Length: 557
Image (cartoon, rainbow, N blue to C red; front, side):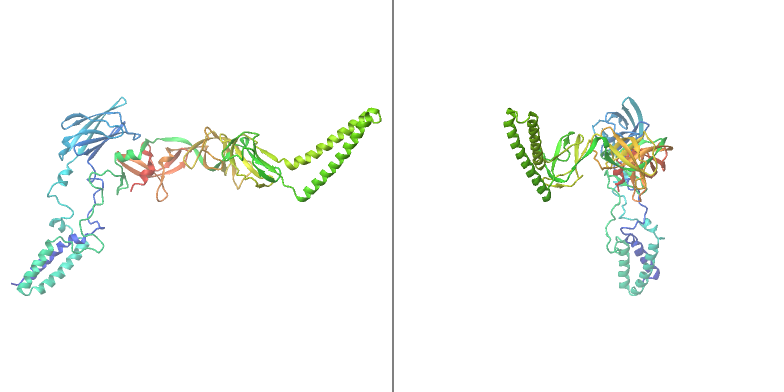
């Protein structure tokens, strides 16, 4: 039996349709993908009011209820929650540090449930209705439900007008011509027809790109029931309530206000000039420790304490002169001693006047003191004492070290009295509102002490005193000084912790748009003080923004 060209072409067309699934391979989306969150996490519903924000999550036959403050996202642990369920009213059980729980056997049905939650907390009663949709379970769990690996003929027919399909149609046409030639005989025609039909009805995965998997494509979204934070295709960040509590996310409602504009100045911590001092050697010499040893860094010392000794060295010529001087004094002392002895013998008989005897004694006493002073100079070093009370901030002397004249041996600082020196490119009048921000985020309250009248590297030094506790600060530590000016600016003040830097360098804040979704917003900010910045553009009043945990949100991918 011979087959017509029409039959052969039909077989080729069937084979072409069988190739459709093979043309779509991993890494190419030929159908619009669903939002990764929908259908891939536990079924949930949410409701909000002016006071509370509630999220209900279906876990098997149990309902988990997360209750937070609407404005701050602070979890509410001591509330009473009553729920109107399909089986009547029920009361949720509180668990400290975790979600409220409610036994819900009716969740086993794949239906749509309308629930009403009555929340009582801190004297506030609120009614929150929400809808929990579990109808998607019927199609997901149905045995005969279609999957991406099984495409119907109608689904394949929808792709006929795609470019890849047209190329496959041309390939099928050429295959039909080859089949027509091969089926001139009865046996070969039957075999060709059977092979074409088998090829069309097969799984259609014979043409796979090298390096790509030939099995079912892996889903790009999360598995069912998973609770992981993820960044969605529309730019929002989905963060389930359990993850929000792990991140410690807190929000605040923002409002527009008028504030004094601030300027940022580079600065560093310096000691108070009236509560610090240097220990220097007046003459060069060899260092030696006091009886208790050299004071260590950080040691508390008092004014007048001996910290080190300096023994000045003597040159050979100086030693020779000193020895010559000592010899002369010894000779004079011997002569005066003999004279005094004669005068003492003659004085009782009146041969020598009493006044002459006393003068000789005084002369001998002076010569002996001069001789003793020379010995003292060679033996006693110079004592270095602390000029003020405080701690040893700098200085590491070593026994036997030669100290040059005016060399700084120790630096004494009172840690409770510190200043900040800032550099400004314009004169700053006395300001009552000045603060400093350290690299660790610590805020310091400052009081203006004075400004320089001479430029220092094209800038003016400005001094501020640190008010309050100065513990943990050190001299030379760099800080950012913020000084309020008289100029008024209108905008939204937010904590500095709310601000993160995007990959493109743009400043970003995160808006809490729904209970479990956050949207990054690009903003333009100006400095306000050490704790806050001023949003000049990019955000409207009345929004909820993240004030704690923004850095963790920025790392969600």
